[in-house]
Length: 609
Image 1 (tube, rainbow, N blue to C red):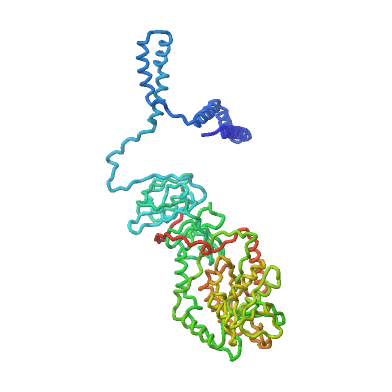
Image 2 (cartoon, one colour):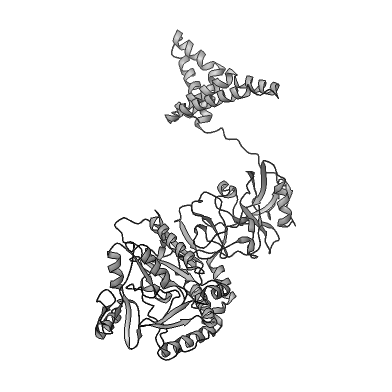
């Protein structure tokens, strides 16, 4: 039905079509005929009648009487006995006219809704007690695929619908569902056919595709009011390099860090998703979290199952985390090494920990797959997000932090560590360290006031939560480097940490960029330096692989530090992008619990239709 505005729009459209037909001379006779049809008065009268009916419909009329014809007949009989006056004669003559009787008959048919077509009964010879109910579905075919995959039901050998891609033609029609059995395509029986034989039948179809379908016996409730679910990808995926994907053409490729909207997780193995901003587009297949975790587990990362060569250092040598290219003579408060290692005893613990990894403590690892995220808009009054830098010893975390701080000291800040050692002559309280007593330090440990702490030379060193709060209270971005196993202490909605993992390049590039690099072994003795060895390179790569596999679900950004200048530019640009973004994506666990996962098993290779 068309409104008055819509009617004028149709008339305008007709006018433009008529003017358009005048310019065609190649098929002049056909266009002249079309023009004359569009100019036909009857056509314009139909539009006028349509408009009147539309206005009448808006008044929502309802029948007063469902049997007007019989009522008129009864009234005519009664009028005969009321005297034969001129008015009575005229009224009886009106009731007797065939046109009036037909009008009342139509009125009664509409009032009683007796105008629906009646279907003839199904002949007895067509009924089959063993045959399921069948429906005929016609879909208009375009250049895009219909958006469904098919497979062979191994128990029956029938061709069934394996998946319906959300947003596709098949999904929007609502006529085809997962589990439906396809009996015919365009009148061609699919009995004993394979999926690859069905594809040509669809390819040669023009305009419309007709399916004969046996509906699935049970259908899951596909509610459209489900909460939108977004996942951040923590790995790269190319379906054309995945031999297990049921249908490569029905899959979605993505890169680490991409935000994906998950539209279906019913399949235990293959989810359906689309990239952020493409929610109206057809969804595609991606490996489920469970599938990718199994893949990672089967790969048995070498860093987890090969014992690291752990050699105790010489007596008196500092074995804290060190970074190459540390510039001597420039001292910045807070650029302290991580407080996670001590002397020989710590090296022994590290060796024992490596041996435990080699015996198969792999079940505790949560390989990086997907992280559920939600949009977050930072209010101007909100504090900046904490930036956490992590990476293996020697990879350059401290150097990157130092360069960030010097590039914009008003924007970035670092914490001042706590220690229990005596203050030296050139040091200042609250600038170089916060000097506290052993009792106070241990009391803060018991009260969980430290993000990270350790012992060296018989003294405690640590980074307190209060020192992080002080930097953030100054409206600066707090830069914090720590071991990834300590991230859990700040992984909260209060700090909203943005975690950057700095990893080493391949060992060949390490040999080129680090072979002549020296790093300070003891901050108190600037002459105590060490050159990277081949063993250091292997330990760095193995440690990075262990960190990424065990803690990768916390990493928001991964930077390969082959060239310190390139890595710094990439890091700085990424942090600026995050700060300036109107919408940031943060883990859903900070504000809500993850929804329960409803899963259904589905397995074999599909064909894309």
